[in-house]
Length: 264
Image 1 (cartoon, rainbow, N blue to C red):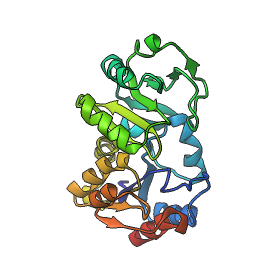
Image 2 (tube, helix red, strand yellow; image 1 turned 180 degrees about the vertical axis):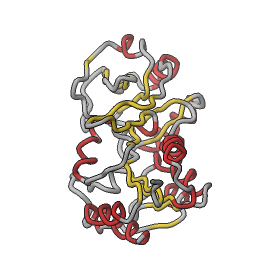
Image 3 (cartoon, rainbow, N blue to C red; image 1 turned 90 degrees about the horizontal axis):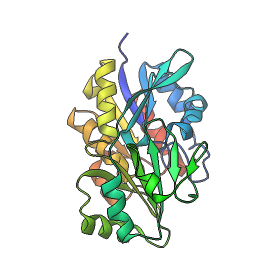
Image 4 (cartoon, rainbow, N blue to C red; image 1 turned 30 degrees about the vertical axis):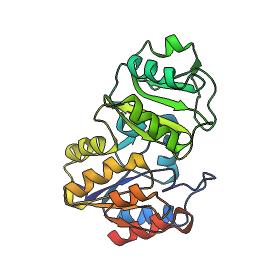
């Protein structure tokens, strides 16, 4: 039976507060929308290892989860999950370019298998099962993402770096704090959700996506192009708000729950 519609939700700043507690009312609102016949799924920049617990916590029954900013799509396989689609690229050119400009930064890559390799420990990143390696080894495998963390640089610094370096062969998003998250060219949450929607046969005009970051702009564009809805959280930066079709309240105030209940 085809779902009534598809709902794609960002995690950080949308479902979760800064302290990683759930936004007010989100569990109840997700359950109401799910029970009304919508396919409610997560679409996050997090890796699968940092995402799985929220599938259970929210009581989601969706068949798919979009991770790593669209580079990884997970699918249920019996009682477990499989890596249904994984996009990778050669990180050597971008890593060499960035190291020349940010020699003191910390670097991490995520392999197609989900394992993480890093040059030094990164605060706020899940590194379970990861391995510290030399910079040379970091660039020796195809990867689904490259993460650059440089606390001494701010968002404006990263934007200048991207412009100067000409990062036009990869897709990138600048995080809330000092990190740059780089994905394969042409891959984002929107391209992944498009694959899932096609697979499920959901109507494009029965779609709602919600998020608060620059890495959500791609899924906003995808939803709007099909006649669906794109909702920016109240605390989203101006460029994210501008990319959305509508706004809801701040994550601290239960903005996601408010947006979800407009489907009922």
